[in-house]
Every structure is written in C-alpha cells, then in structure tokens.
Image (cartoon, rainbow, N blue to C red; front, side, top):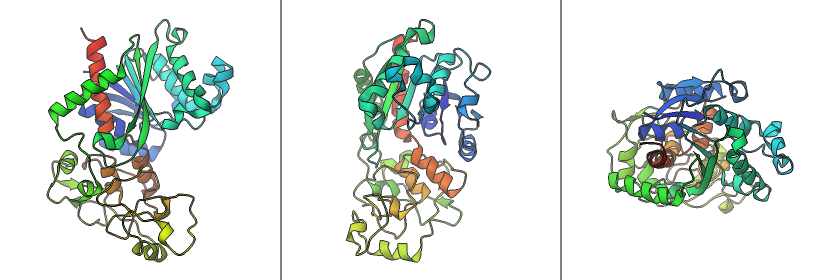
Length: 369
C-alpha cells in the first residue's frame, strides 16, 4: 500500500482523490485549527498535525522513506527574487518560508514522487525566474545526498476534467532519479479512467451539478432528490444525505439588487455604483453554463459571479462544494467564513483523483519490480 503525506492540506480535497485511487494518507499538516478539525472529521484514519509547518519540518516528525508520495500546495505569495541573485538566499529568505518547509520535508522523507498544486501565476512571477529557481533547487543533487528530482508541470482547467468550473491551476510533479514524459502519462491516465467511467470527462453545467439539491435547510443537512445524471451519481452519498446546504442571509438592499439581475448578468445592469473591485460583482450563474473559479468569497454577492441561477441568494457551501467536485458525504466543520475558505482553497477532487491515478502509473513504470 503506497503512503502519502499531505502538506498544507486544507480540508483535504487533495487527499480525497488519492484515497479514492487506493493510496493511504498517513499524515496531514494544517496550521488553521478550524480547518484541521474539518480534515480530521472526514479523514479519521490520518494523523493530523495541527501546527505551524516551520515547527515540525524536522526529524522528530518526519523520517526517510516513511511515505512514497508528498502532496500539497505551499502558498507562493511570499516568493522573492532572492534566489535569482543567490541560490541559498532563495531558500533561506524568510519571505519564502512556506515553500522552504515543504522543501525541507521532501528532503527528510525523500519520497518517490511529490506533487505541488498552485496558482498558474507561479510560472510567470518575476518573468519566470522564481519557477526556474524551484526547478533548480529540486534538481540539485547536493540537496538530496546524491539524489535529484526531475520536474514537469502542466496548467490544468477544471472544466476539462468534468467539473462545472473555469478554474486554472498548475500541477508540478517531481519524480526521484527518473525523468519522464508527462504528456505520455496524461494520455495513458485518460485512457485508464475512461475505461472505468465513460462519463468522467463529460462536460458538466450548473444545472447538472446542482439540479437534485432541495431547498437549503436551517442546519444544512438535507435529503437529496433523485439522481438524474452522471455527475450527481458520481458525488452522491450512500445514505442520500448531504450537509452544509445553508443559505446566506443577505441584506434587503442586496436582495433588491439580485432581483434585477438575470442569468449571466452582473452589477453593470444596475443603475447605481457598486463598491467592489471585482468585475463580476453581483453576477448570476447560468444553469446552462459553468461557474468561474470558486473563491473564498462565494457567499458574498459583490465577490463575483456566485448568485444562484434561480434564487436571489448566493450559492450555499454545498453548492460550491458540488462545483468543486466534493462528494456529498463530505461534511465541512467550522464557522461560515472558515467553510467558505476551505471550499474555495481546495484542490478540486476530480483533478486530484486524475493525478493520483497518473502517479500510480509512474510508480508502476519506475519503482515497482
């Protein structure tokens, strides 16, 4: 059984896909205590380390070869130009500490493979110099006692994986001591998944994603309606229950604005100035379309195009989770703002599963037998 460590785990979108592909998630690291509780509630077999990663990236918490895979997405907001001027400066610059501690744990464990998910802007920051330095650090044999990682990356869009969302992210895969052709593995993985589920990559719209959810409830728990399509079937829970389906209570003024807005329209049709920096403020989704990137502010009308296609409210956490391809039996814990953060920052589960299957192919090719 292949073992996985999930760093910067959030509520566990990355972990769900790997579990579904047959991996065992042995440890997860999440700094936020509310989010860590949500992860632990849904991944009871995993050791949750609810601490600042800078305090646990050491031999007391991680050991050589304890996991085959490390997954996670270290936030990149703090990356600087230090490494372009000075190789050690990049990794030792305190502004890059989140990436540094991800790197330190890879050094301690030396997994066969690691995967990083990040915003695609990481590729172009400082005209590409930051990403080049990341490649250099992982491929430097001096950092891994003679070993090295070969890295390749791809920009993924959620809608290409049968998810009703236009969300672009970069996936970076590093393989220890073995170069590989990522395009070949992607093509092979698509064939494997297609052979198991002919509908996996089918385009999905908002109606197909949300159509069988009843009206929101006070406590968020509700019985699902009849399953009508492959996407609803893919996410459905065994007991046909789901959670976190709670409507946000909007102000009278916000509701009056939403009443004037039709599908695919936004604040621009209102005869008033809206104090929002978001170009899609007060945008209403369309049943026949897909969602923009689900952010941590999907419960706020001014936060983007997150108004329900039919009702005068923003989408509920469960509806956002559906658009992120979370299974219906996943129950988010925490405050309203925390749950929005968990869902908005998560790796879409269907993307996670795809790359978990791809990783199994790499393991079979280079590390088994």
